[in-house]
Image (cartoon, rainbow, N blue to C red; front, side, top):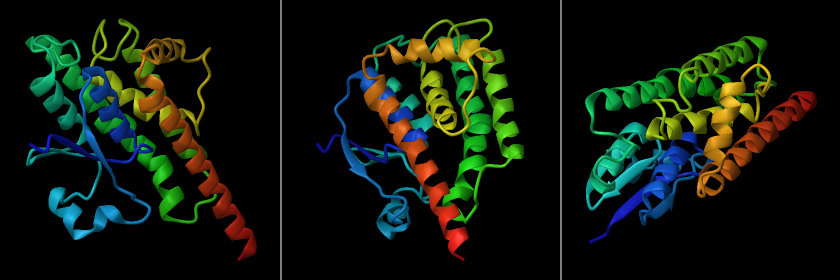
Length: 227
């Protein structure tokens, strides 16, 4: 049997969320790197796997799962222990995890794309105040969510934290937040950073993502001066 194959790219926040889940579960996965900047996600063989031509994609012996949120639910359900807090089976707890996942998919990740995608797809010279304010409002929403518990979906770690932390850590590298203004977010980040697999799965790659955005902005500025 081929086992689990993950099509991924570590600078991608959704891919990093899946990496956190994989490492939390202790799974062995064969990783196939998809270079988005080189257009590998647009090749026919990849589009056949995912018509949305996006990573991550999981291949479990021919069963194809797309979208990081769906992949994490699948992995914990299929390979986690019964009653795993990462994705609990109890209805109310599970609903809270779903709410956290949807908060990432409908608020955090879209705002990150809104701010960063034009840097790579056009010659934009910076991130506007409008976009910075839009991201800052997302920070405040997460700060409010964390008011009554130490984690996104309650009092324990779940896959909702994996999704949200990858988006937040990516945005923070380019659009910083002050600890005094967002103490709950920083406390939450400090807790997640104690996970033995955090740095490898998200810490280092998030730094790399931030450096890529900064480098592309510098290149865009250089190109503008030369034109």
